[in-house]
Image 1 (tube, helix red, strand yellow):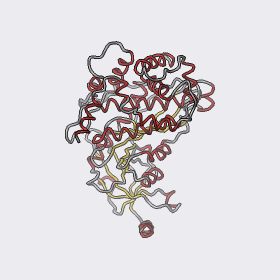
Image 2: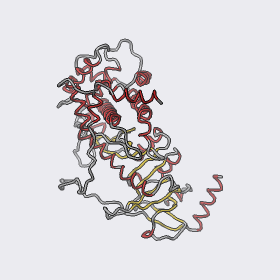
Image 3: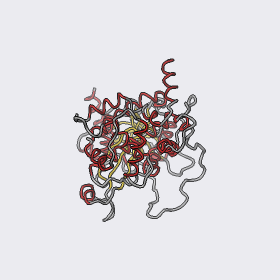
Image 4: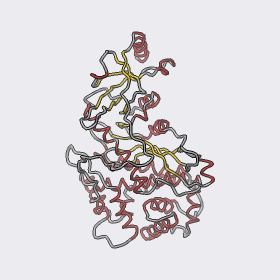
Length: 449
C-alpha cells in the first residue's frame, strides 16, 4: 500500500510534458509496439521518434502539417537528446508515416488502454460497473482525386470525402477507450460497436442512444457478457406477461422479439424496460437493459448513466473543434488513415494526462473532470518553450478543471442554418405475450437448461 502511494506521488510530479507522456508511453508499451512493426535494418526514421512526432503534431499550433511537424520535431529533439535524431524534412516524415503499418498504431492504442485500466484504479469503476458511452461522427477530408475516388462523398452531390468515426468513451473520465473508422457514407455504427465489444473490460456498462436499437446489437452484447443501457424508440416492440398500459408503466421485465427474428426462429431477448421521467423535459426516456436486478442498476442510477452519455458528444467537440480535427489534412488514403488513427491516440493521451492530474475525488463523489482546452494550452506552452515553467507540468494541468456550475438555461443561443431541430424518439410499443409466444419461450428455457 505504501508503495502504491509513493508511485502515485511520483506520477503527480511530472516536471514536463514529455515526462507526463512517459507515464503512458512506457518502455513496456513501446516493446509491444516494436513487436507489431516489421524489422528493418538501420531505418532512417526509428519507431520512437516517428510515433512521438506523429502524436505531437495533433497538439502543435500551425496552419498546415509542415508547420506542425517543425514544432513537434524541435520539441522532440530538445526533450529526448539521447535518442536517435529524427529526419530533417517533412517530405521524409510523410513517406515514413505512409510506410508505417496500421497494426503498429493499433498496438499502441491497445497498450495505452491497458495502461488506463492500471493507472486509474478506483476511478475506473462507478458502483458495480465501468460506464462507457458509444456514438459516432463524420470527419471531412480534402477534395483530392484519390480520396474522392476511394472514399466517395456523403450527402449532397459534390460534398467532400468523409470518414466515419465510432468511439467508445469512459463516461466519468471523458477519455476515449477505443474507436473504429470507416467510410463516411457506408459505415455502420452498429457493426463498429459489435466489432469493438472484444476490447471492453469485464463489468463494462455500455450506454447508447436510440441509433443502436437492434436485435443483433443486443444479442452480440449478451454473448460478449457486456451489460448495456440503450434508449428505445417506436422502432422497438416489447412483450410483457402482464397487460399493463404504457401510460402506467414504470419498469419491469419484458421480451425484445422483433417479427423478423420470430419468423427466423431466434429466441427473444429478456431484459428490463425502464421509464425515466424528468421534470425538466417534457418527453420521458425509455431505456432497455440486460441488468435485471434493480439493486445492481436502479432506476435512478440508470437515468444518471444516460445523462452521462453526453460525454460522448463532449469528446467529439474536443476532438473536432478544440484539436481542429473536423477536417483532416492528409491528401492520400494511406495518410488519412494514419492521421485519423494517430490523432485519436493523441487525443486519448491528452485527456488521460488531464484526468490523471485531477485531484482525488471525495468519498462517494464523481471524479473531477479536466478541461481539455486548459490541458492543451499547457501542453502547447511546454512545446513552444515560451517561458520556463515555475511549477511542474502535472501541477499546472491540475488547475485546468472543467466548469461545474449548474446550468439553468440551454447552451444553444441561436438557430444555425441547415441544422435540423432535434425530435426525441417516441415511446416503444408494449404488447402482451400470446399463448403461442409463451409456449415458444418455455421451450427455449427447457432447451437451454
